[in-house]
Length: 186
Image (cartoon, rainbow, N blue to C red; front, side, top):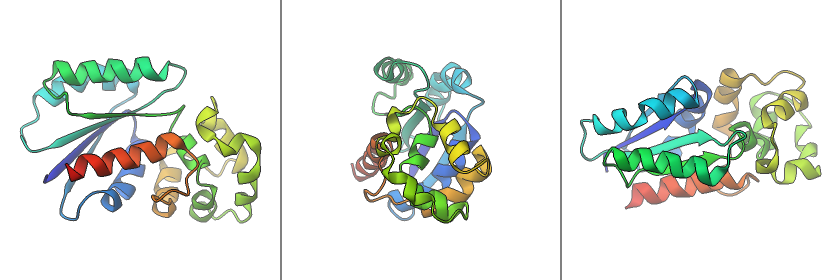
């Protein structure tokens, strides 16, 4: 594989992935992350983008927030779009409930990236033990950081410090990482 193409719903996800994907894929893999302007834009353009992609050896990943939707239904809809474009092998992953859950799963990275000492003490709070269950992860993160976290700049600052080998308490983050590794191995 020489090329990995990831479709995401927003710029903050692109900022995160551009920093962590080089650590997940084999050296020399060309990485392209294409950000859309929200989930509706992603879903309306996905099949066309996949169908028209020119590199036949490219592998594809689609990442979208669950938000308030049913995770299985969201994933199935995205898989159907990939199938309709002739790319049934595309990896579809859902951030439960939103990308910020991934940051809340690694408060050490948040503290280091945003220069907030002592924030890791909050890891022991019940609501942060399983951040994928939080319906309002972005609000929780803004509150926990007292407004320091902003979507795009926060992604840039936190991502380089994220642990990709299991410290993260977000199950959906760990599943994303293992899925990308497996896709790139095969």
